[in-house]
Length: 127
Image 1 (tube, helix red, strand yellow):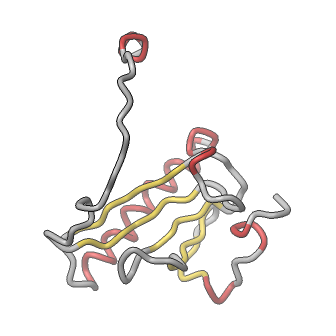
Image 2 (cartoon, helix red, strand yellow):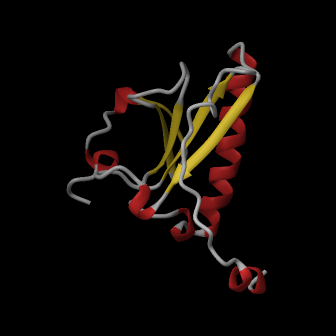
């Protein structure tokens, strides 16, 4: 996409690791030191659009990067999060956040949401 920062503006020196389908960079606005993004090289709006081979590659890369973060940083674990479609920032495409965490770091303390009272009956029928 023409305006996508992930497609057009990531420079080779920003890429810290890459595979056939993904590149790994440090988040430019990190929640925590070591906050990584795993970004698809192809422009996908959602994880549901990734080919199966890329999905497998993504999970393997996620595990590899988490293991490296846990081995080399003094952390308790990693939170993985991704947004898709209309929830992504404008000018981006599918990506996965890997956020290093410390126990009791307050990560969830300031999270605010307005939960909806959705009827989940139809969803449950599809499982």
